Image (spheres, rainbow, N blue to C red):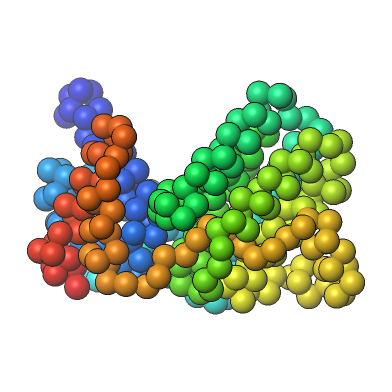
Length: 284
């Protein structure tokens, strides 16, 4: 195989990975949804080997399960796994804000505020985008630490948290995420790592609470928990939840939505094609 051919194959596998990852994070692909290699390969015009590579990457991030003799499916974390994921996430994100408190540049602060403004604009008008932006806020914070390994781990647990909320989450207002993210930015502007950590703790406890998940910190004395919530100004949670519907019915309306860039059009076209009635029937 020539280097040029290998490069093309790698780029196509990366495109499949990105398209499926976005669909999972935006909850267009529900937990447990089958991901047949042959159907995906056919629609993207690639071999099953490239599809398998993309699915392997997603499995390494905990977003896909590779089941022996049954094929791949969107991961469906158990209740115990959900609790463990949120415990790990709290520890990682506490480290993020402790490192960033009082250290953000004016440019970084402006970028965070712009991101939250995008969240506000998407609220109530573009639910899939709102879901993705809510998670990406946390990844953006982690990237600003300059620690690539920390950013990778935060991105993974934030994405897996989205799966958990898709399964166990309760209806709520996405205004909660916007206001809490703004509170985090304000806390980071001060040179007080302890307060920044408390605000982040309060936010993540509220997110976990939407799925009725008790993290280890929530077993602390009630007074301590209440103090954290008051300092954080926490309300009820993060990204909005997609109502459970048939997979094809959930994605098709979004396929008709107007998109503003070639990459967005390519992504939506690819995913909608994969989820056509014929392909969906083959995956059941």
